[in-house]
Amino acid sequence: EDVLLSKNAFSLTDESVLEAITYINIDYAAKEVTVTASTTIQILYDYIQYDVTKAENLDKTNPISTADGATFLFDTDWDLIVTGAGVKVVQTSKKINYQGTGNLTVSSGAFFEDGNGAVWETGGNVYYASHIKHTIKIGVTLIEGAEVAYFVSASTTNQTYDLNRNATTSLTSNASGFVEGYSVWKIGSTDYSSQDLKVREYEYNLVSIPKTLTGAPITEDVLMATDGFIVADEAAASAMTGISVNYTSTTVTITANHNIQDLYDYIKYSVTLAANLDKTQPLTTSDGTAFLFASNWNLIVDNAEVVQTTKQISYTGGSLTVQNGGFFEDKTQAVWETGGNVYYASHIGHTIKDPTETPPEISGAEVAYFDTDGINRTYTLGLATTTSWTSNASGTVEGYAVWKINASSSAAQTLTVRQYGYNLISIPKTLSGAPITEDVLLSKNAFSLTDESVLEAITYINIDYA
Image (tube, rainbow, N blue to C red; front, top):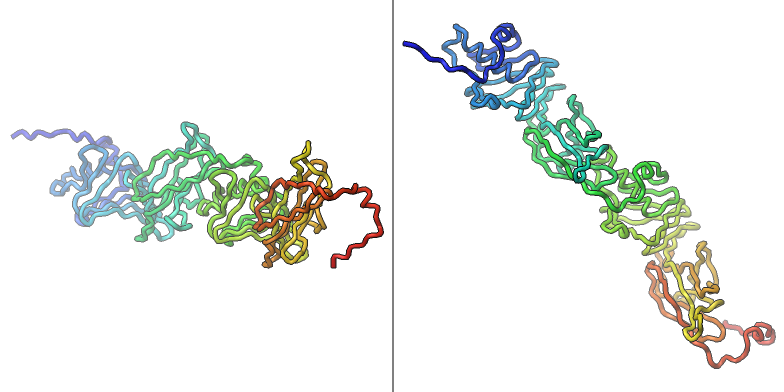
C-alpha cells in the first residue's frame, strides 16, 4: 500500500535546528516536558513534533497538538516544567492549554508567558500575572505623566510589577500615554484576582476601575476627564509650602498663609503622587465653591491664615481646629485663636442708609452687636474688641460679631445702630457663623430739634446709665 502523508503546516523550524536542541527533555513515561533554557512556544511545539517522530518513539502518543498554530493543547495529564534561573519561555501570540491533571510548573527563577498569562518564580514563591498595557487619554489627546497601578480591591495592597517583574509603586505613562507591566493576581495559592485599576494625574479627575484578573492580558485605553476645579498648574501646586497631608491620621495641617483654592490644589497634587495612589481623595468639590472633606478628615490651621470668603469647607465626621494664633474664614464662618481661647464669629458688613435722602448713605452711625447679657461682641477686622464700628462716608461698617468662645455660645444677639437725629435701631439676630451683609435703614427722629454740634458742647447734663 501507499501511505499518504499530509504536511504539518504548524511546524516551522528546520529539523537541523531541532536536532541540536538539548534543553528540552520529554519524559513519555512521566508525561512531562521540561525546558531548561530560554525558547519560544513555537520551538517547543516543533521540538516535540520532531521528538515524537523518532524511531524509538513511534509507539508514543503525540504530547501536544494544535488546530490553528496559535492555541496548543497538551495531551491528557501532560505537564510542562520550565526551570532554571533566567530561563524564559515567552510567546504572547500563542497559548498552551492543559488537560486532566496536567499543568504548568515554573521553578528556580524561571519565567513563562503566553496568551493565557505570565508566571514566574522568585524567592520561593510563584507569581501569576496579567500582562498590562494601557494608553492614557483625554479624547484623542495622549496624557504623559499619569500614574497607573493595580491594587487589591478595597485595600492598600499594590500588585503592580514592571516589565522586569520587580514590584513597583506605579507605572508612569510616557509621551505616547503608554504604560506596560504586570499585575499579579495570584501568589502561590493565594488569590488576589479582584483588583482596582487606579489612574491619576494632577489635571484630571481620579480614575478607579474594578477588574477581575485571570492571567489574560489587559490591553485597554483609559479615558480621563479634566478636573475643572483646579487653578494652579502642577508645578505651582507642587511648590506650595506650609500644607501637610497626613493620610494616616486623616489630617491636613496648614502652617503658612493660604486660601481654600490653594488647599484644594495642593491636596489634589498630593493624592495623585505615585506613593498615594491607594489613598482616598481627602477634599472634593462638585462646583468649585463648596468643598467637602472625606470621612473623618480634619483641618488644622496652625499659626497661619486660611481665608477665602467666596468658598466653603464642610466636614464628614472631622472638624476644624485653629491654634497658635491661627485664623480661618470661609463663606460660612470665621474662627481664630488667641490667648488660649477659640473665637467663632460672623463676618459683618452693613450699609447704614436713610431712604429719604439722596444719596441715602449715612456717615458717622455707631454700630455694635450685643448678646442677651448686654456683653458687647463687636470686633474689628484686626480681631480686636471695639465699642462699635462707625459708618464711613459710604455708610458702611465691617468687622466681626463673635457668637461663641470655646464651647460657650452667645448666638442670640442684638444689632444696635444709633445716629443722632434718627430713631434708635435694635434688631434681634441669631448668629451661626454665616456672614451677615445687610443694609440697615434708619428713620429720622422728628422730635430731635437741636443741632448735634450744640449738644456736643454741653457739659452741664450728666447721664448715669447704671
